Length: 354
Image (cartoon, helix red, strand yellow):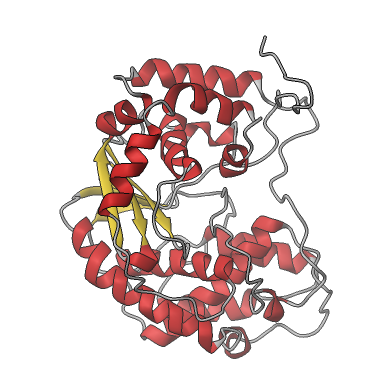
């Protein structure tokens, strides 16, 4: 049994949130499992990562909400690598707003039709695999950016579970929904697009095979987690933070967490990478090398996956308590205001499980 020093908080014994929320908590059983196995070589890996990271900021902040910008950039990348990415998260958000008397269905249907994407009839995750690389969506760049901002707001609302002011009026129009995006956000998304098109997408062109956008894993039923992209065995995490790339412990362990959650090797992950979009910095590693570098010794991946699964099963909440899938509560504000304010000290990650 782990000893607790006087004054220290006792370690948590159950999983209380999403993967990155658990990684942010040093007392979490998930964080402690990974700390014990994958931090002996972390300092050396961080040093090498920082040494090769560029200093030039290609996408400076214009003042738009950083979390919403990140989510919108995630959507933008999906549309740039696939002509018709799955939008089931948006459909879930529309359904959630309908329960709060906000009717986004007409607007989202019109936007989806213009973009040539299909709104799923069922809200369950249908999977988003395709043979890549392939041509991205050909919509007008500004229209696509505005659509991605709207999709980001709807996605964030679904994920965070906000209390939304009841609207109760007629269905909202696509024109109004597309007008929500502030100019500051559109400017940042235009720069992100240039970085994606000139740096990331060309680098991914050699990864031919099955691509997955927003994949969930076999272990996601035990702890909510979805990655950004798997391109023919390359697990890629998109970062949109303003700080210079440094491979902090949460980012480093996040890649390992996703890999271990692929219990049956469904995605055949053979390499991992991080793309720091504001700096145009892509760093990839062969999976075996990455695991061995952080652990400071070779890793038996099947055995570690089995141990991770056993830990997750033992750390499940009691029946009936569940893991909050909509943790947190936003203020009672209309959607049009939700992404327009930016706390200067805020640097939130943008994905469902971060």
